[in-house]
Image (cartoon, rainbow, N blue to C red):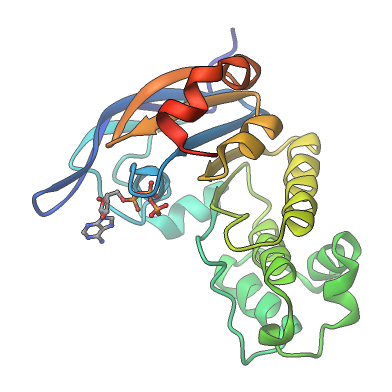
Length: 237
Ligand code: ATP
């Protein structure tokens, strides 16, 4: 098998005395969609925040394309193509959609006007409303804006933290369609979700987290087919 694009070994993340991630390991194959699922507080955000350089791991190693990136800061990682769409979207609601994308492009030092036009092509609703405040968009549209902003960095691996949070079921489907399209275009996706069933339906592989540890791993199809898993670890999922 080809070397993984991402390798996490024995990762631990602590906040003071709270051990949020307690020594876990997994690989991500290039071009795959991998999901980390688990209940609230299982440690999902802490894992992707550690990989993307937002929090410092207590111990363990993270490799991107074979190179140790454990202590690399988030700005450098963005330039290398590891980009996160944060939980809660974090769009600048009083600024226009265009300004959100322009600021994103500047921060990511990658987006040209043509790249922003590419985002409008992909998300026509953003193009149509580009002069309106981002706060006037619905939750699902704000999620599209957050994803569009991340895509300006031309990610090699995109990390999505709870993209379906707080969205109506129909909108959740739209967001997942976008995620699946991004993956079909060749971008590796690491998806963190409490909506385990929907995430596993989209994913190739999944890891089930509980209390900062991986309790089950497998192909998404196998995890979905295992009746016990969703009930045991994921509530109603
Ligand atoms: P959620 O869906 O709520 O984001 P999660 O699975 O992503 O949950 P984390 O956010 O990684 O889980 O949190 C794991 C544990 O670490 C929880 O017990 C949480 O309270 C704790 N934690 C997370 N961030 C901090 C922080 N900045 N300071 C202290 N404790 C934290």
